[in-house]
Image (cartoon, rainbow, N blue to C red; front, top):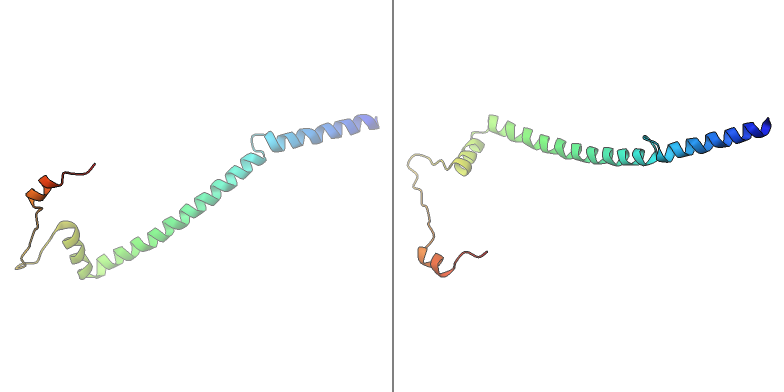
Length: 102
């Protein structure tokens, strides 16, 4: 009777160890999930930093007319009344001499 209990106990221990290493939610799955959670925490931290920067940009746009003017000039090409705009175009002779490099 004692021998049967020992064999059953040893079998149960082996079964538990196999489940731990090869089961659906075993040790490899746990380690994979832990690595994934660490990666997600890093991504979340980067997104929070970007969010802080964007909130600063929003505050500047709401309260700083100079920032609005700067963006309008840079992105939309706006100029003030009375300003002279100079646009430089490439020399067509130089383009023929130096064909576009691949």
